[in-house]
Image (tube, rainbow, N blue to C red):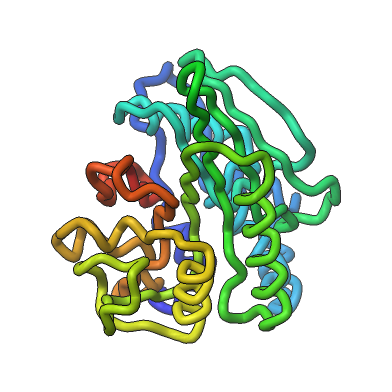
Length: 272
C-alpha cells in the first residue's frame, strides 16, 4: 500500500541475513503482530480494533521498545565509526545505563507509564574532554505539526533550560525538530549558512527565532551537500523529502562537516 498504513510494513519486513540452523526461523513477520495481539487474524476482521493497533505496531517496529530492535541497532552501529550517538523516539520506559557488547554505554530516560508511545522529549549528557573543557550534548525530539502551539512553546522552554543548566564550554544539540528551516533568506539570519533544502514552514520560523535569541547556529546549512545527503525525512509514498533534523551549537568552529548517512537500515543518521 502507498498510503503509509501499517500493513505496508508487513510487505517491507526483512528476515535476518545471518545464517541459522535448520528449523523454524528465529523470527517471522507474524511474531511482531502477536506481541500486539495474540489472535491477530480475529482482530483484523474488526476494522476499528485493527486501526487501534496501528500506532502500537508501528512503534514496535521503528523504535527501540523491543529487544529485537535494540539488537538490530547494535549490529547497524558496527558498520560505522562513532563516539556519541543521539537517538529520538526510543520509547524505552524508565531510566537505565546499560553497557553494550561493544563496550559503549547506552543511557535512556523515559516515562514510567505503561502505554505505548509515551516518552520524554529531551535529555542531555556532559562529557569531560580534558581538565579545562566539557562538552554538553543535548538530544531532543520536537512535537510534530499535529501538536498545539502551547506544546511547541513548552518544548522550547525545556530546550532552553537544558542548554542553560550546568554551563559547559561547548554545547551541541542534535535533534529532530520537525521544522523546515530552508535556506538563508536575509543576511540578518546569522544562524544559517549558505546551504540548505528549499522551503520554510511556520515551525521553521519558530526555530529560527529561537536560534537568533540564543545566538546558536544550525550547522547543517554551513556545508555544501547533494540533496540525498541532506534530507532526513521521507513521506510514505516516497515523493516528499524534507530536512528536519539538525545539529545546533554555540561554537561554529568545532564542526568540520555535517552529512547524512544512508547505509543504515530503517534509519537515517546525521554525523559530524
